[in-house]
Image (cartoon, rainbow, N blue to C red; front, side):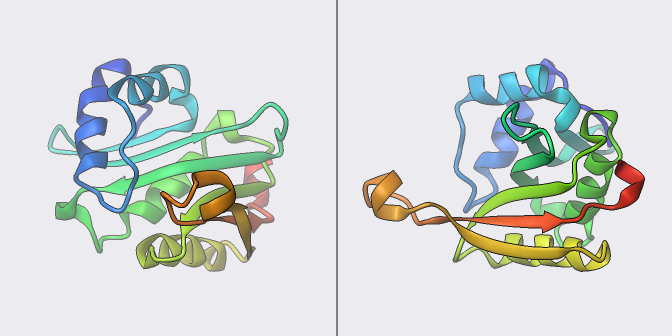
Length: 160
């Protein structure tokens, strides 16, 4: 596992596209994540091929939080616990030091993501709470399911 570089942008874009129900981002967005936000993103490789991706950031308005935007795992690596290992690798990063809460958004009908974050919270002895963050009608004009914010806290003390 490593930080991404701009050269990873195209492979990240392809991995996200092959990982429904993730929303595809523009290739440019993925390039920015791989470069400007590299310290809070994770690439997992096997035999020189990208098989996992986490994008995340710390919003200046909430420095106590690490927001995980997307988690993508290649079909060849699903069921191996890679998503959880990438989350752990993210928490070990210096750029995440001091964060007390991990947040993410998940649609109701994404059992894989709910399972990943529920297991992560349980493994770290943390609580997971959820509330609507971006609602179908109010924020997406009916074109996208409600995104529920999952908040996991407290994060392991080794991170502080």
